[in-house]
Structure formats: structure tokens, C-alpha cells
Length: 138
Image (cartoon, rainbow, N blue to C red; front, side, top):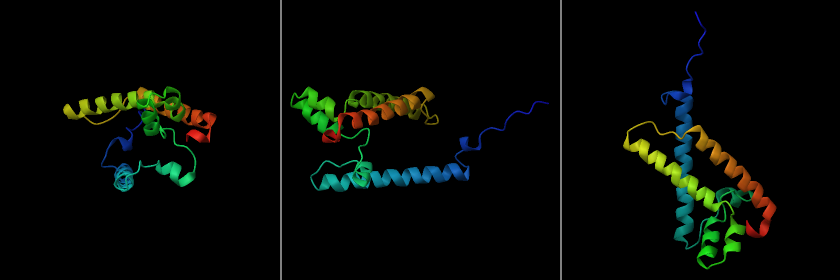
């Protein structure tokens, strides 16, 4: 008889470890929403929590300021604030479409491995690029 590996326990949401991860994710998302609402109610664009706490840039920070510059016609400034904005916005749109499709079909919500790698690679390259451009555009 073959020794087939047991299926991964984490694939089941009833697994206690997976349930804890889900709870932490929901609480973190709630904190993120509260953070943004507090800043927006104060009439300010919310800074990245990571950047605020560490002083380091977040790969996605600068997108709002970049879009504001783009609307003023300042293309160079747009790309200096976050050159990966078009990539992130595209990945966000594609990911959202995939998730909405799965919801409509009442399937488990997952992203394919290639999307996870696309996100990971773009965020890593975006972060390296932020450091290369310099702190003036963090």
C-alpha cells in the first residue's frame, strides 16, 4: 500500500489553527478600517499604518498622492510617488474580479498561485523601488 500523504489540515476552516488565522485576519481588517475612517473623518488622507509605525515606506504608499499629481498632469511626480501604481491597481482589479466570480458561483474564495506570486513579486519590487527613489517620495 502506498503511503499517501494526509491532506493538509489547514484546508479545512474548522481546523483550530485556520480558525485563529481567520479571526486575526478579520480583527486586523477591522483595525485597518477604523484607522482609515479616523483619518478621513479628520479630513486627512490616511497614512499607511506600517509607515506611520516604522517610518519606512510601504510598497503601496504614495498611490493617492501620485494619483493627485496625475490629475494635475504631473506624470513624473505620479511615477515618483509610486511607479507600481498601475501594476497594483491592475492586480487589485483582477483579484476582485476573480473573488466576485467565485462568490457568484458560491465557491471557496481563493486566488490562484500565479496571482499570489504576482502580488508578492510586485510588492517586493515596489518596496525596493521606493528605497531607490528616496525618502522625498515616501
